[in-house]
Image (cartoon, rainbow, N blue to C red; front, side, top):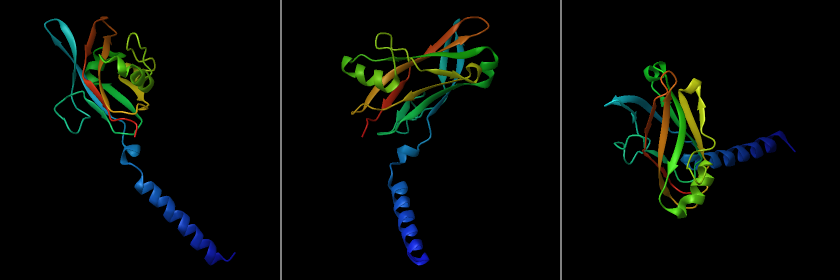
Amino acid sequence: MSNATRVRQFRKVLFATSLVIFMSPASLFAADPKIDLKIVETGGKFKIVFENSECPADPALLGCINVAKGSKNWLQWEVKQGDWQNGWDLSDLQLIWDDPGLTDCIVDDFDVNPQTGYANDFRVEGNGKQGKVRDEHDCEFAYEVNYRIYARNRDTGKMADSDPVIRNGGRE
């Protein structure tokens, strides 16, 4: 085989590979969504307040996370530096749903305990400052699920929580 033939074959393979990369769904390359949160005290109770939304269609819905159809992502949360320095660490993630028909999807997508809704694989990292869970996104259809994220103050033992929504776009 001549060098010119090898070069032509290489160019064809390179071109075909480029087409596959550029024609793949953008969601496969999407960054993992991250929600920034802070802890506020109101009337002696602590609450988690979200500072951003990862739902482009509804940016005012703070804490909302949208996972594009067909993608698999790490969903991430991070406590503001000042709150973390004041003792606040993320501790748990709980998913909440009313429709029993969603149970299998939610359990499979987020690896949650079907009785309690707590995510078995919620990972707390960065000395408590960050938390994340993998969304396997294997359910065939789109659905919404509420979630509650918990923080615990390592100095006082007090707890804070909040409950926004995750929008899963379906598998395909």
